[in-house]
Image 1: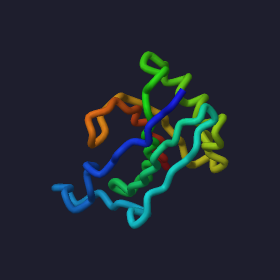
Image 2 (image 1 turned 120 degrees about the horizontal axis):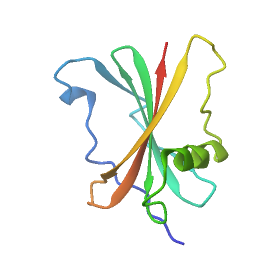
Image 3 (image 1 turned 45 degrees about the vertical axis):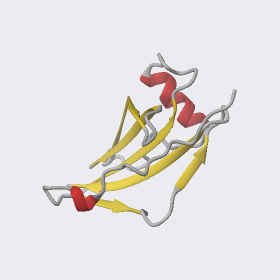
Length: 115
């Protein structure tokens, strides 16, 4: 199966954050991760009110009805750390569908680091 790389050119930026609590990290270069099933995920990181959030955006094709567990398992199998080695930091996973800049359906999988 052929997958597209999400176009994130329409992503929100820290400049547009009215609260001033968001800072984009590593925004000067596009970072990607090849998933075990051949998809390419675009990776974005932000610091929001002191907490780190890491986002993985990838094509929904074939995973339209996937559970959060199935998506988490795909990311884990692809080398994404889903558990913290620091007992004071909790990692929370969530996922939802959204559109990329070209209107194509993509998954937005988010890891939130609390602690």
